[in-house]
Length: 160
Image (tube, one colour):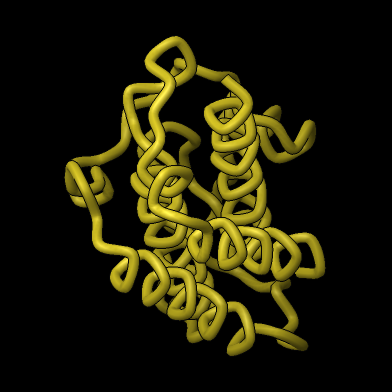
């Protein structure tokens, strides 16, 4: 959870930067702006943590575990670039408002605080569209890996 909290703090700081940085793009790196990456990543984080909470409440399907791709991402802590497409529900607006981005980050941080100290060991899974069935601990780990992936993309956009 520590790495997730650190990544959320970093996202919050990036969202507070000036408009030139927040809405900067670098097409060679990504089609999305910094704001779009922050909005997407925060909303995905919030969704992953909500799924983990549902699983802790016993509201999952029995058995299973991540597929090979999912196990590799979770083990290595890295998502290959340019491989996945965001589900429609998580595609950001063309120019998300700073307030909406900050609100999404705060909601994700509140969801993380809500799981802090919880045991993430338990039964039940919810399927990820690329990685297969994942348990609560997998969803929390994925939230951190995914957020760090987008923070790295943002670093490259800002450096371009």
